[in-house]
Length: 341
Image 1 (tube, rainbow, N blue to C red):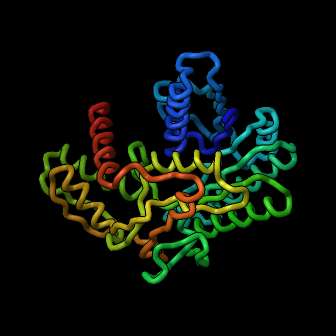
Image 2: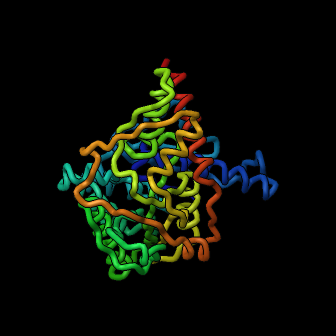
């Protein structure tokens, strides 16, 4: 890999992709016997987002990657086209999105524009610039909609029934991808990415919210922590973000043009189980209460994916267990508490 453009650069997933990319270059150099050699392949990254990541100056030091950041709104087509043309990426990792299902119900227009329209601007800028590059179009398991136990595990062939503005926007992005591959020859690989979690994730999402509430309770000296939750009976397929970025890297290199891949663990867990596991690891008991404001108008009760195609075609395998991920999230949360004191 040489020049990589990453949209949504300031988000949760981008940091881990950079970290994996940096370490994979070192590992490759060591394997080839070129460790410390100036012949090591040079990787340049152009990160695009509306604002710099938090703690950018402190945390974004990757010795094997040259990083440049550009503050740019992807709805600004002219500015985006200039950036794409001048950088001429070999690969584009399109992570930019408004990814909260709950937020999409509160502002569906903004959700649709900031998912569908930004992707359309991106592929149009590539097409008009005449650049030959591979694009990874990241979609969502929410596209499947409400399914029954008989549909589980969900394969890529399952008919879609999107049940939220966010899910509909992601289906639109997927259809645009297929159109630009079939009719305009762009090299796009598609994912339906299931729930991913890990250290650094914002607590607007459910699992880091559990972690934060439990650690706040412990800091307040409580042995039984009261939590505000949504529906704990919901079943989700959670994958560690570090496994997610390894999958994205594998798909950029080895995915097939125009093909769609589930990025998932293949295992389902209720939110109740997730909460109880975090509480066990933290050494406390919890007393959850359902907040009606966290109940969505239409929620998928069960989402578990089939990752056979991803594993078969790229050789990818998940490396982290759910318990390992939750332990790391607790550890990171405790570190953040110490820093903030």
